[in-house]
Image (cartoon, rainbow, N blue to C red; front, side, top):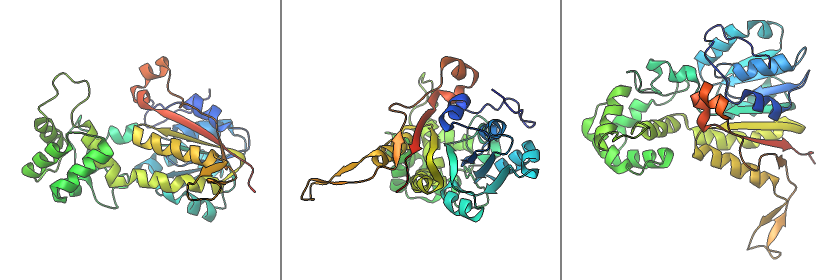
Length: 319
């Protein structure tokens, strides 16, 4: 493995790095899209393995990620091997068309948060340290978590926490949040949620974890973006090209699993059809019946990898 050092943080370790490289079958002179740059770890390794002329188109909604990777991989930008664009990954096809960067050999989506976002208190993604209740991947655009927490009606807030956080105590949490408004910092919100549900009571996971997840997903429309980008990968991958998606919670993984399964079908049941269904040409071959997860060694080195699930599919020949 040819890990490229990160000048801004040697502690940053990309999740399932070896497994992702195997999944994408990275080869010299290949072209790849990293839809979620983060710290640039996966992109750096793709560039190292695809030399001397391989290219990566790297996307991220977070301007801090673009700045970080611009600094880390400056030489690859100068020599034309790396193109960076600050944009949400749902605009992947539009950006690739504009850059004339298609078809490609592989696409990676490493969903969720980067360690840099979690470790920056003023971004508002975590409550280990006090920070502004923001949670936007792009802090210059859209509503913040504070906007939702302080302005949504209690029933809408409860529905949001239940749907995106799978939090069964959402009604109680939302009611107490509304009572305690205004709430502007991460530690304030964490304290309110903890009081709403009666404290940790020996639980390993903080009781506010699912509420924070729900707000982050809603603020960034993460599930909607995922649903919109997956079909775009079909138009970008060349036949035999690989799609690798790393998810970190069941809502994301369910979307990826079902979409890949649907695209691999050669027959769609339809009780209203005279023949009971419709034949279709599959677009994908799913290579992971079960998702790939981190081994014990990686989870010890990088605790964030514990919840990571990697699913892989290969683009079939286009008709």
